[in-house]
Image (cartoon, rainbow, N blue to C red; front, side):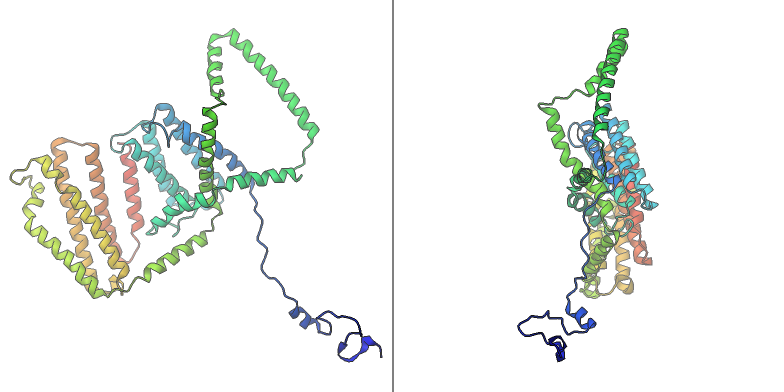
Length: 458
């Protein structure tokens, strides 16, 4: 019997053996550790992203220095208004270009309409109700929210109570997390060319450049001859030449350097949202909702007593101040008051009280141990509190209507009217949600945004 035939598969004397010798194939497979983790995929950029990255340089320039949406007079000269329109069209076009395969939610048409109305108001120079700063702010809000809706990256898939999280995603997380995405896309394309994936015939390139030089020389000669032949054409060519004249030593280079981070922010927002997984965003929203649900630790009896205290306070206020509060309905002013004083006094305080009631109701509905709809006492008190809030809105509106009837409309009075209507609609939406359990915040948000946008045209 040879050494290789020793029982148990023992190794020859003086030799060494691998640990797996003498094992059956199944045991060998178990003995060898296997890494089942798939390798992380390398970075790649699609052709669309490459083209969009190049276009973002022009978009950032329009944003900063032609439309002057960040610097310069926000009231806007006619040329800057036109560039604002071109910027918005470029923003919308680039978004559609990158997200064309994404199914377009029907709600996105509403936010696109709001964006269009605000842009139209800027183009027309309407500053009757909202001033220039406010319109530019509304333009940014509408643009980012439309992009989130169009790309399907809203946390709930539609407008909802996680609006704040959507805003953080759109203005902070997406653009800054993908802040260097444009550089990575262009670097990926450059490496692709250098590695020879796109073969370049350098002889053809050289001859093409020579042909281009000859053609440009002939073109310049033709322009010179035509300019000498006609003075009007000469002036036109002079104006066009001004477009391509840059101060390479100072201002132009500074503007270009400043537009780089702006372009990276815009591209990070538009293209970065395309790289976000909607399901991960949904899961983030579910975790946040689960955390809010974990706050349900306060006994319903405690919130019922506290809500009852607010309800009783407002009832006492209405009884004691009824003649003062409801005087506008009968056009009867309290003694010693004039119309302007009566209309202004207490108006914004009543609006703040309604905001305070919304905060209280949110705490009650989110922190009660049992849902409010399952506790009749809590539900009844919440509905009474909403009814009192609606009465506050009606009183505030009556004071404002008397003021407008006597002295006419002004921008501040129209803004105040819009605010009261939005608060009143918020009470209706909250009450509908408490009674039926159906989502109503989305309708209220759309009503508020559309009415705000339409006021920009006044």
